[in-house]
Image 1 (tube, rainbow, N blue to C red):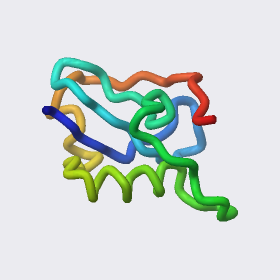
Image 2 (cartoon, one colour):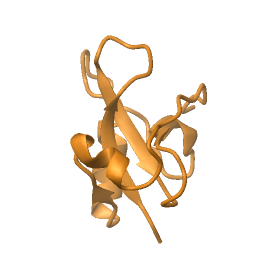
Image 3 (cartoon, one colour):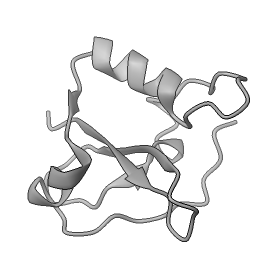
Image 4 (cartoon, one colour):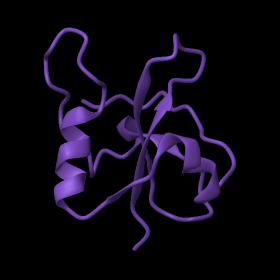
Length: 87
């Protein structure tokens, strides 16, 4: 199964990067919060990276980390913002 992760800037944000996931090669990158089945709660650390706990879990599960600069080479040329909340 195609399972890739990448750190990309939040849409309309201040340049802060969050974890994005891609489960199919022809699908756009989506924020980790859109994948409730794969995510774990973020660490409660002020200024901590959004998605770091999920990244650690998925890395151990065999997901591939794609460098941010190469994200568009692995599937869709864009990524989508989601309003899904990780609750």
